[in-house]
Image (cartoon, rainbow, N blue to C red):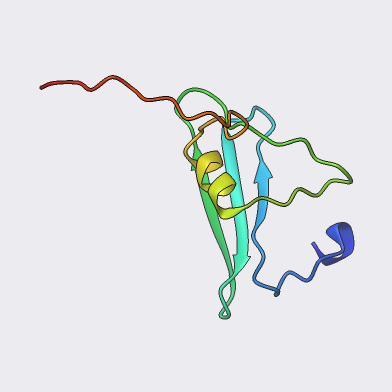
Length: 86
């Protein structure tokens, strides 16, 4: 990571990688004891991936949260969903 992305892997930043088909996300991060790997694979659908300039994208925590929930974070309007009565 240090030579390819020009970032310090021990800085506390998250490094997020997407699988080729778009249904897999892997996150690498340093937890002060070692590198941790988080992986999530969707049963159906794909992760909404931001456009990368120079191979690097900066996301806010809200954008990351929506990315991991496979919510289209580019849609900025909030829409109310009808209530379901059970």
